[in-house]
Image (cartoon, rainbow, N blue to C red; front, side, top):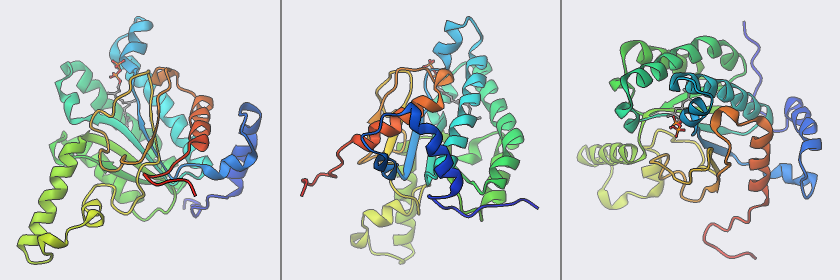
Length: 267
Ligand code: FPP
């Protein structure tokens, strides 16, 4: 039997993790920690450049990037952040060299083989964003099994985008709404933003509050287009395999200092 903990943003583990961070951060006040984002999205960029810099094969850059991924997931869970969305493989990534695609597909298998027990024990709920049907059988089954196994977990919502494109997600949502309309479940003029959001992979989760893209690139690259409407963007220069928990904390600190008005005005 695994010992699952209920999601609790102020759990003792989260408090202890924050305590450990304090010496590294210079918050305007400790109250900044009350301004953690509810939903963080990360574009894990720079694996290729990291590999080149170390004169290694690209596949080893992605492998090293997976090590960073494990640390960042653990830390996000420790902090009590509600949702974490990671861009692991885009619909455009199929155009990369065959060996690189094969390496990424293998990493998906390796990652779930080594992490699923811990993630499940920590009450993490895994959701795959993207078209799983187009993936090789082994990968599809692994991802489906991770989703099924953690479906009732109530902790961190871990969204991993694989064979994902933001525009494709919106097209899919439009198709699902059309289907509802054709079956007479809704009238087209009733369709509103909430109904569209409910047809996205991330339905039931809040919009992205903070988007981090490593490696200095400043693009959204078709990631969570709808959900990022009011996201704060932070672009650390560090390549993903070198990205540390300390730098993640700095990005969270930048977020805490941002003035979010959502198109309105300060009172
Ligand atoms: C972008 O770096 C990164 C990717 C396309 C893949 C990211 C995947 C992982 C970190 C690991 C696999 C995920 C799981 C869930 C096991 P890039 O190669 O485009 O970097 P570059 O711009 O420097 O070439």
